[in-house]
Image (cartoon, rainbow, N blue to C red; front, side, top):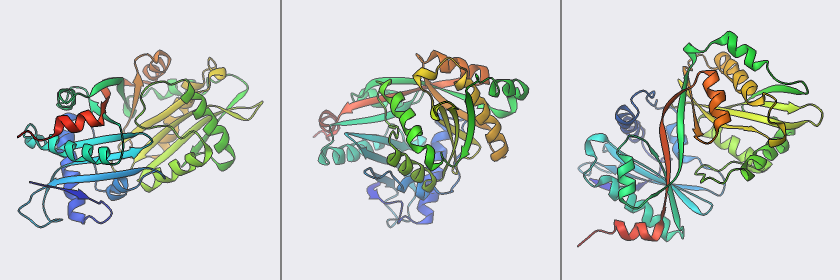
Length: 339
């Protein structure tokens, strides 16, 4: 087994395909109800990052073959952003508990240490071997979310139509596939900034809360093969963005979309905005994405209002997802090989 730094931009088509096979082998065990990945824009998905961020990747491969020709058995990447590194570790199920995950984690952690980062975060899926793996290494649980999944073929569309039209007077709904128009970027970013001030939780995927970073974020999504859809609630008297919801349809698994932010600005809460914009989004997705079958979303358990809205829309709770954090120096020491 050989572990080496790996650049998806220059990787062969066979390597990319082997990586997709490994991802799908992991999904089949850890998330068997999730759709498998397609080998579509995977290279771009792994390579593209926001300005000011870097992603470094290593692969574990068959060392009996030349580099670039062996089968990929696992990979780790670390996204360096702000003052934290965000990890992703993937190991084929049949090779787990043999030290490969630890070896990959050690390589990435050492790089984070050399780059001057003090903390590393990682997301782990409840009910999988990742939980005891990270906790045994000293990762501390910081945040818990519950994933819920909506099957579009079970949606009560007439009832959903009533929800989409249940907006108080003084507001209008706008639909923007691809992203908000330029004249709304500042108001859109302001709504995100307002929400960020209300959120003290660990965030391994920080919001873009200024207009230029929002532009960069939308451009990066498109480059990675992630098609954004936006529904806004506009306060007609002021023209401000009172609420927004974002869904992204990945080219890698277009049967299941990912819910990103849903935000209602504090002074506009209580007018049915959250329910109306999410309901409208589902109608738009049904028309725009004929292969779409499901939408998945994540919510903190304390966010009772959004959990209630999602339940009314038909979402079903799936499983918990945990965000962990570790001190880089301590982690490097714990991962050092013993004599």
